[in-house]
Length: 180
Image 1 (cartoon, one colour):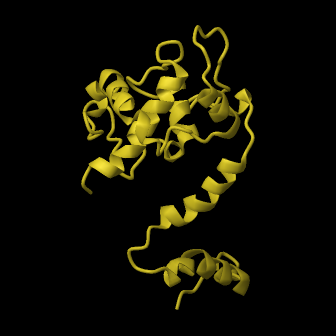
Image 2 (image 1 turned 60 degrees about the vertical axis):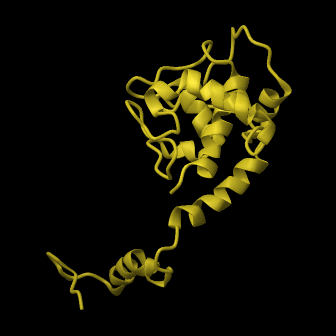
């Protein structure tokens, strides 16, 4: 087996136990199991039950609170609900998909591709997220509204929040239209 030593001799059995517990805990996992889904599921439940304030919405890069002041837009009931719960009411709503697709094509497809395949910007139709927080609707909203590294500038004041929520719903719909 392994022998752990330092300048003073063997390390304690506790260190060995910690090493084994750290690196062998995945041995019981099923081959091919989606570990991210197993880890993300409890977090999604917590997020859905959370009550947010505007201060809880943070910039993806800066980590500072997003600024919702001075916007010349009418906040829809969907936006108000989203900003309280972090749950996008448009996700899964088939009635808005045509409009959401048009919003996405007009504002996002130039960099992210017509079906989210990625061009100048990263792909949005797979299971990899440049910013892991974007796996949640709140995280993706924060990235779109507040901007990210590179060419993804903040959409505050450029794209209404309601439209951002519809675009997120369209991005989440890619799994239904893009073969994997």
